[in-house]
Each structure stands twice: as structure tokens, then as C-alpha cells.
Image (tube, rainbow, N blue to C red; front, side):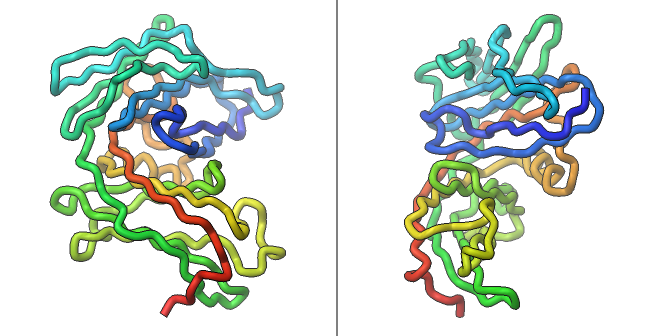
Length: 269
């Protein structure tokens, strides 16, 4: 089956996040593949099971709900069964992730069992978020600067995710050595000032709602994200068992929101 592109959401339940993040997975000629997207935060847990879809085939609902999904809090010694909700995502009401706890996700589909583990790091706190214009040869560009507190002893990585009007916009993996005086900085080039010359993927318009999320993540998860950025569109393998795509992450989410007003943005000094 000729598979060129698969889009998978990272944060699926409204209870877990106000928006969604999409990552593009690209394939060549390979059979249909299982995809697992698992996330537990301080707000709840969600596991989405899907199958890849060929771009030359009509898109149908590829959600998989005929599965056994369990989440093992290995620190507390408790195992939770997750069941599909009305959107097809596996969850359990009232289940919240705890800082420092190690979690193991197990998914059984037919004769295949997949497992992955992740430890929830302490939460970060977003200290500031702002836009600044910088002058480029082709136009002025709005740069988004986000600063947040470092976690632990400068060993944690971070996942910065940005949404535009509730839709995925940009994301960035940030290494621990980025921290200065206890603050980590993420910077993204966003929209040009002349939006007539900007494409739809990058353009920001007056009044756009910009939601920002930051999660501290492990080096393993950071390597997975780096592999996506470096051209391995499947990412590093994150599950034991038969081959599948996707990830499992335990992480607290910190959020803030901006409203984009280009006439109020200062120029960087």
C-alpha cells in the first residue's frame, strides 16, 4: 500500500488540552501500520489507537476501539483499565498523573501486545511569552519568545507547542543546556508583517488566539521528536512488541495564552 502521509494528533481529549497538535508521519510502500498515541498529565489520561491510511484511498474513520488498554502506575502499584469514550479515545474518569510516578502503557490488539513506559517530571511554570518584530532581508517577522522555569538539575528536555485559534501551529523540542539563571527560552519565527506574502501555514492575523503549552520530557521523548525534525518521519521506536508508530508520554502541562495584535508588537532591541 502506498502511504505518503499520515497525520496524527498529539493531545486528543478536551480535558487534557484546549487544542490539538498534529505531527506528519510520512511513509513509502509499507503495509498498514498500527499507531498508538498515549498521554497522561495532571489532568487525565488519553490513549488513541488508529491505523495508517493510504493517501490514494478514501478517508474513513481509522480509529481502533477493539483493544485492551491498561495503564500501570508502577510507583503506586496500581493498574487501571481504560475504555473508549464517545470520541474513540481510551480514558478513565478521575485518573490523574502524579509527579515522579513511573507509568507503563500496555495495549493488546488481537494477538499483538505493545508496551511503553514514561516517568512524569515536575511541572515547569511559564514566566513570560511575547512577540517581537525582527528585521529580515525580505520583511519584518514576528518572533515568539517563551520563557519558563527549568525542572530539576538542568537535565530535563522540554516540548513547546503553539496553537493558532485552537489548531496546531508550531512545536519545538528544547534541550536542557538552553537554561540560563533558571529560565529556559524557546523562540519561534512566525508570521511576516506583510501577510499578503505569507502562506496559510505561517500567517497570523490580528485577533488570532495563540495558545502555548510547555511540557518537561525525558531524553528518550526528546530523541523521538528530534528524529521527526531530522527527517525520520516515523520517529524513533517508542514501543516494545510488534512494530507500531506513535508514542507514550507522562508529563505535566503548563499553559498560557496570547492574542496577536501586530500593531502592538515592539521591535527587538
